[in-house]
Image (cartoon, rainbow, N blue to C red):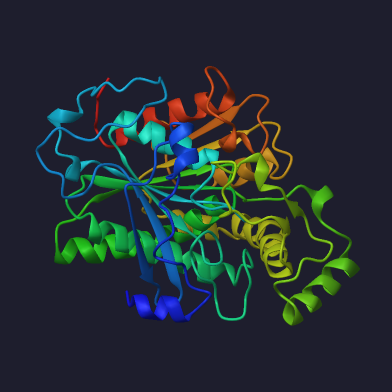
Length: 375
């Protein structure tokens, strides 16, 4: 990357920004900070930021750096027995208005450290330290398929960069979950192409946390308002008018983080998500397109709260049921959290809360896929 171009373009992230969760506040809260960062330019020209958690990649055959795990100790477990370059990768894609600095990402980082996985987090275009498409402001999402392509290129970039890893799974929450689901054909294609050229990590499958695969009918405005908002979107896509209000204080980590968007959602973002959840996904379920999208997927793991106020559980069940994988052999699994809402992923880690249960079961599943047993 040409640093001079970053300095001359205010829309591009500054390479001098602190790594995720680093700094004084992160130290006080004993957060696991990102160990490195890299940025890559997608094929459409957008510069995307990626935060990496885990030992330095060239740190071979030595005692590894250890960060506090969820139980609060600094035990090595069995890490010193394993070459960290071979650790499996968990690639994560966040939801609307979020970034790499949330309580959900921090919890993932803690569990990855405990189970010897390397966490790699993509900040979507217009989010965190990633730049946006020309003319769009922060958190203003472009076309859904453009973001899907970014996820595909992200997985390809990571698997090439960490080519010694045993394998990788791709995880997404809310909008990120929908993006990951629709990226499956592209991920499979790039993995197959790469496999034919050079050795690289295996693709284990995907994990979706409260994925945006439906919408509560109560949240859909009357048709005249929807049409009016679509018209405004084409004129002022980055403005927030009659759209939901985002309050990152509920999930920002550390609390002072400025990476997450605050305020009314941009019109383009609301329009994109409404079209996806109210039209595209239901139509794909009925038409059989979901079967096409998921064909060849190694495994699927979905976590939903039964009290999700944003995405109806039944919508996700309808989508899940048509995915052409067998539930008998553990390749397709659905975990329903009793009493959990849409934001369970960002609850601060505590002893027996729903967030903790979700992560325990997620990593049990991931470790089986990676044929790992560190307990």
